[in-house]
Image (tube, rainbow, N blue to C red; front, side, top):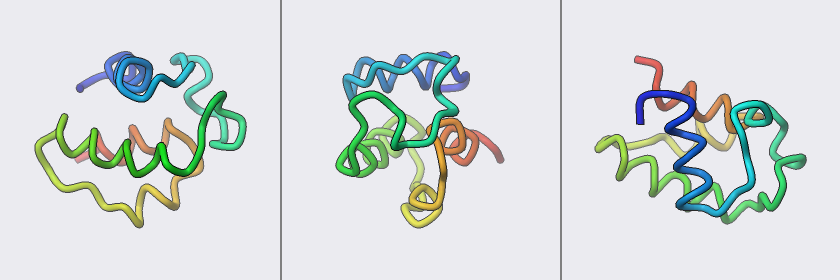
Length: 75
């Protein structure tokens, strides 16, 4: 997972979320189908995809999936 497109595809395929690159910046409460259980699944999924530990507290502070992507991909 190197690009935003890869991230969106992962969200669609693995979590079944109806998100696009255009709406990935929406607040979580506006993401169609989002609930808090998705965050836990997302952490596990991202750790598997990136082969590194992901900080749950950092992700819980993220206001959007875009910020989650940024946290995971920024060095």
